[in-house]
Length: 182
Image (cartoon, rainbow, N blue to C red; front, side, top):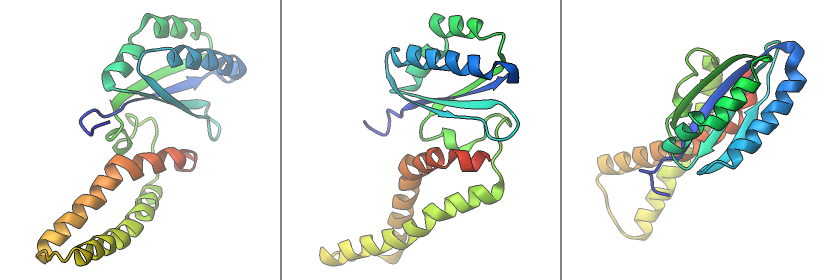
């Protein structure tokens, strides 16, 4: 898949009435089965509530943003939402490209403490800023190429930022989502 064809991601937040949590989870499984059948579907991640609020975050991935939008506007999804009215307090969703959605909170609904953002970023930046210059310098030395120091630094910055935006930050925020939201 090329960089121009970013994966489409939708983050859906559901706030559930506490007395209906079991019904909601049954309904959510039905909804997951429905969007798995939808064209362009790739994956689903569900972040279950942490703390006293019953707020679920469902992360849907489709092959493109257009496929995500088609699902969100589909008759199937609207019928499922009508079915969920008794137990669902809120249905909020946001759609983006995979490389963009981790930069912003969900319209103030989900906030991550700054120190957690810093720690997670630092855990990724530290090994990258140590390994990338070393690997690049070794590769240039082995190929007997000489770059001006400014060009070497530009190349290092480009590789580090590319790795973070297109790979490591989206993956790490998914893996650490429970900790980030706790």
